[in-house]
Image (spheres, rainbow, N blue to C red):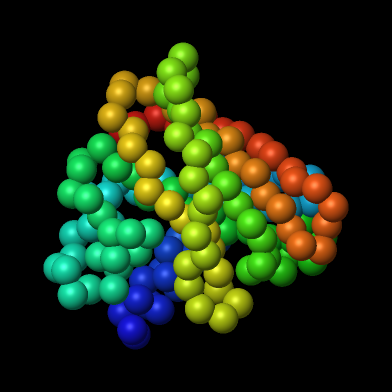
Length: 149
C-alpha cells in the first residue's frame, strides 16, 4: 500500500511539475488541466503482486497501451480538484476514437485521474478531455494533440 501511495504521489508530482510547461497544460473554463502519457511498458514493469499491476484493470502487456494521467486545479485558487468526473476520447487523426472515464488515483487531496488507451498507429493523436466539477454547472472540454515518441 505504501508503494501505491508513493507511486500516486510521484505521478501527481510529475504532472504538477508540468505546470511550467505549456505543452502539458490546458485551461478549460476555470480549470487548469495538467496531463501526461506514459507507455504501459514503463508503467507495467512491476510483478503481479505490486499494487500498480492492477491499476485501471491492470496492464495487458500490450506495448501499444498508454496510461493517460490528468491532474486538475482550480484556476483562481490553485487548489487541487479531487471530486471531478473526467472522461477522455483518444483518436488517431482520421480514425475512430476510444472513450473512457478516467478513474481517480491517489490518496487524500492528492488525486489525479487516469486510464489506459491503445495507441498503435503512427499518430498523431487527438485527446479530448471532458471535465465536470460538482460545484460548477455543465461540462467543460479541451483537447490536445499527442505524438508517440
